[in-house]
Length: 85
Image (tube, rainbow, N blue to C red; front, side):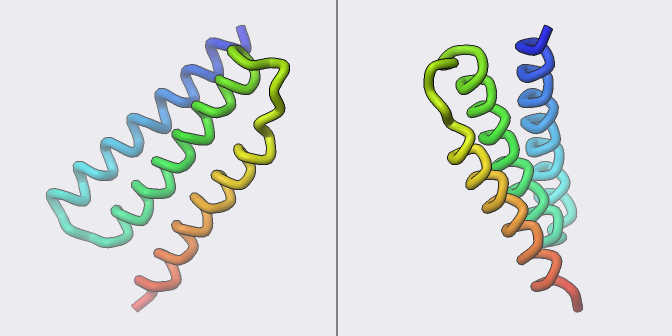
C-alpha cells in the first residue's frame, strides 16, 4: 500500500512539473518557471523516497531527500522574492 502512495506522489509531482512548464511556454510568466523547477525537485525527492523505502531499504537516503526538498523550496522562495515587483 505504501509503495503505491509513493509512486502516485512522484507521478503527481511529475504531472505538475509538466503542466507548469507547458503553462510557462504559453504565457511566459517567470513565476510558472520557478514553480516548475520547484516541482521538478520535488519529483526527484519523491523518486528518491521510492528508492529509499522500496528498492533500497538498507540504505538511508533521507539526508539527500531533505537536501533536495530544501533546494527545491529555496528555488521557489527565490522566484517569489525575485518576481515580487
